[in-house]
Length: 484
Ligand code: FAD
Ligand code: NA7
Image 1 (cartoon, rainbow, N blue to C red):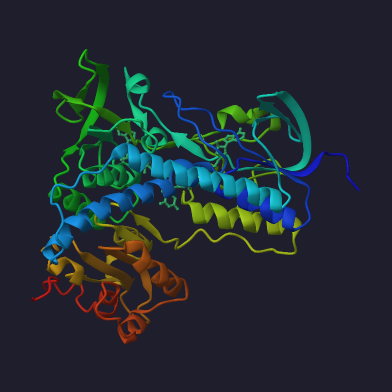
Image 2 (spheres, rainbow, N blue to C red):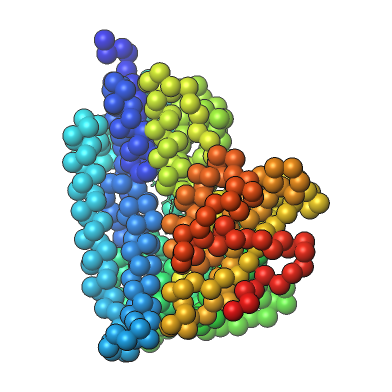
């Protein structure tokens, strides 16, 4: 029986969360349609189905990071005896077309997958007329559809600062991975993970990024680790302008961009010219086009607040992924939450999403990965007297021959001080950080203790084995730098 509505479920947004939710709901037997629509950036950049991660997020970012690490590896290879031309230079346009070709192939595979799994997909922008009705704006005209249930999975887009020239002359991560010219000397405004990652690979590719930091680096992350990330980037020749905010961007007759910026305490105004200005000042949830008021869904700071069932304040409307307030904005979080929601709605499952202890990596030139609590959050939660921090600097084998700086290779375990010495957080700065932390994340979720960690035999010679030899506590005051 069809019931009074066209569909059981309309999923708004075909990104990480929406696609996972739509596919699972269909697998559970629901009648589903998934809408996805990308508005072009002010520069005109647009992309296909799949959302942020595939088109303008994780994937192109990791590919450019990899390109930058390979350049570094070629330089290192010389020290190992490879006869390489020391003056290697990347071809930006070739890199961009390789990255874009990969993305196009993923877009294609996504559409085939949707067809195979019998998920109806509409390339259109959805907005509510009432809690059960939506208008879809499509190239071919508007269409009205009804559904019993809705899942809002619209994600977010980069913000622009409210200053003269920002939108006309600046770009964001939405434009960078398909930019049709070399970025050149680039001002990266914002010191969240996206700003730092972009600055990192631009430097590795031979461009000249500068990072402008309004307050602190990597807000929300362990601040000792964040400081080490920034120091390692400065050591690679990336200048950081601390405590500065941009005032204006003008285009000079030379084509260069003149940026005026101000020190937030002294009010001192400076200016400099750049080829590219990249805004990485955070992301805005895409609530505006949804006309949520027509459905009665409340918003909160451009986001939607949900309960532990991903339910909004309107009974038949749910939200998942980056659009929900106060949860990690990461693809695997969006995918799992979307899938679990579909299973609860249309399957037998009652399982809820666990948003705690989600591991994550910052793909800066020297990578940083972590899982669990930062040191400051552990202190806040349990008190400094109840926390033991085991830490150490270490020397990756890979760094010896090319004589790379090992000054910032550091790791720590934040643990319970007494009793079982349960591990609350693990933090690692060094090569292939994500690969190192992923397995430890499973251990931490299984109740990892310092004793288990110390009784684990390492794999030698790796950098991950350092976690099995952390025997210096911060409290002891002993020097955490290795002897040799
Ligand atoms: P999205 O993937 O953004 O999908 C939402 C979709 O809905 C979009 O296609 C949007 O256009 C569409 N839409 C919006 N409104 C409407 C509407 N009204 N009607 C129809 N369609 C609509 N995460 C990681 O885990 N690892 C990383 O390394 C990583 N790197 C990142 C790097 C960058 C530069 C960025 C920007 C993000 C990165 N992320 C990373 C975050 C990750 O991309 C997001 O967490 C993830 O894409 C969120 O998925 P989502 O489904 O909630 O939203
Ligand atoms: P984040 O992590 O929100 O970081 C944004 C950065 O930009 C951060 O350093 C901010 O400094 C800075 N910022 C914010 N507004 C301004 C203005 N107006 N001028 C200058 N600098 C500014 O965003 P990302 O883009 O890195 O990451 C996107 C999302 O992924 C993010 O929301 C995370 O939840 C996950 P601040 O620390 O606020 O002083």
